[in-house]
Length: 210
Image 1 (cartoon, rainbow, N blue to C red):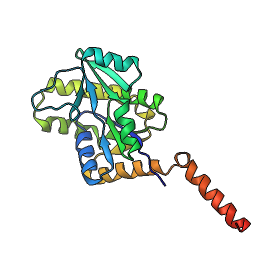
Image 2 (image 1 turned 45 degrees about the horizontal axis):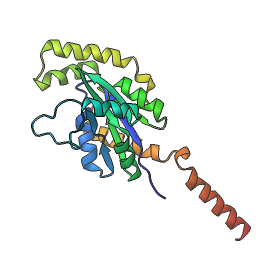
Image 3 (image 1 turned 90 degrees about the vertical axis):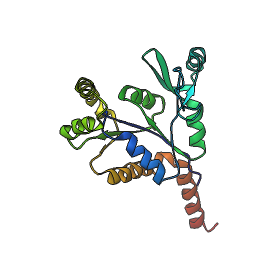
Image 4 (image 1 turned 60 degrees about the vertical axis):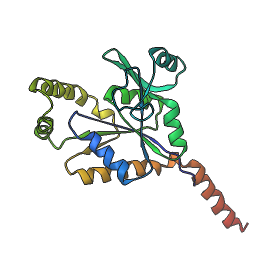
């Protein structure tokens, strides 16, 4: 049975540990691919086209929009960021599950365009743990942390739109839960109708003695 990859969107509050979860997931299991975004911002020192980002001119990016070659896109600080459709579909055809780490609004856009997308929201065990993790980074001022918490309040209003939540308390358990949820998505009946039909035909043939 040929296995086509699926599209998975992972969202969650800033500081909840999404990046660490996905890094461990891809290290532990070989059939996952992290989506590479296209952007119009300049490449930073050490970044390579096709590794960190697909770097595009503004004209190239807007042509991608016009040609419907992006799964989703948005503008931040004067630059475009988006998910190239060709890269994602190519990875899925090769049997890899493609993971997009994007915020809530982008996730809902993807779900509308690709209804079979699996939406996962990573949660902290409680709010105090979330703020402790943000402070533990030691890279942000209290003002920035407060803005991130305010953003978390906004994002919490749309969590009901997601398929599953992952409470990131124990990192190892969270990785395994994420993997299990994605695997379960592969086994949904409506994703395997060709295989189901094949088995039905084979069983009928046996009954008829063919």
